[in-house]
Image 1: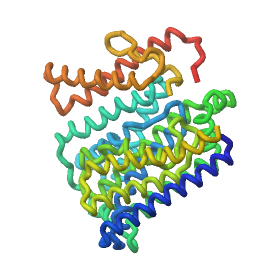
Image 2: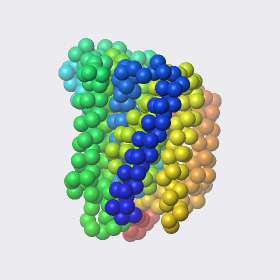
Image 3: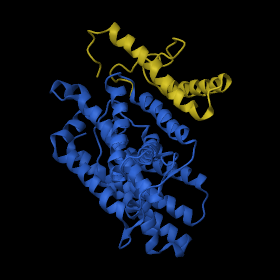
Length: 319
Length: 82
């Protein structure tokens, strides 16, 4: 697929997502006119930040190819928030809580990268194992109980909003995505990621340090999970050992909806952000019209199939 | 999916290759069954239930890493498959 053809596909993907989002909103307003309130938008964005950050990490890892996938993201978010709070409770300076989150998250992601690039475990298996370990440790270390005591100066980050837009969406989600887009499209590092995702052998032959880049990608993915953990701490005021549950699968749904190729090398962050907003609008809307959360999972799955089919059918006809 | 460096042959505990050379859907399903069997065994030998998934994950990495160390040592000269 040439770069131009792919850019065209990216735009049509965005159009599909925008169309789905609009018809979803229209459908919801018809079903429940009371839903048309500004605070609904705030709610959607409030829920979006954590999924957006985790999805960005998932995007990086999947783009890098080599069957890259990070199933441990949910466990990472849970364990990072628990460990960071435990450090603060053990006497660590509270001012360093954000740094603790970022550091621990990156470290846990680095473990994945080590397992994949040095031990040469299949990413699916390595990150599945660390999902068990991280998620399990978060629950086992706390006995399943929340750790309270998030410093009060942090909670405005998680709960405040500026003219209806949650602060963490403004100061964490949007800048991170902008930075991600910048790195992927404007830097040599971004070129390497696409190159090794598209054709790993060629990338190696032209001298890209594929293993080094891939190790970093997993660490970056973990770092973003750490940021998501920080947002959850600021939001809930406590570390919940199950806060990251299902995030790894939701983020996979988001990146596939957003047009990232599961085999790597193709896709961008714009579509991913759009897909995250679509998924969170869907969940919030269904909650509002009182549709059981069990159905929400099924509906997200159906959505995934519809969008992938819409993407796939024209391709089959031309090839 | 299955053509990444070194991860192609996965031999779980019994020494039988369940993936038979490449990653596949059936291999994934077998893996799920294996993990359920493990967790059932943990209950029988008295691993605290809170720690079971941690032990599962560690075991998974240990067993598969050992297999890979073997692989890498056995074919040191082999170029890393891409």
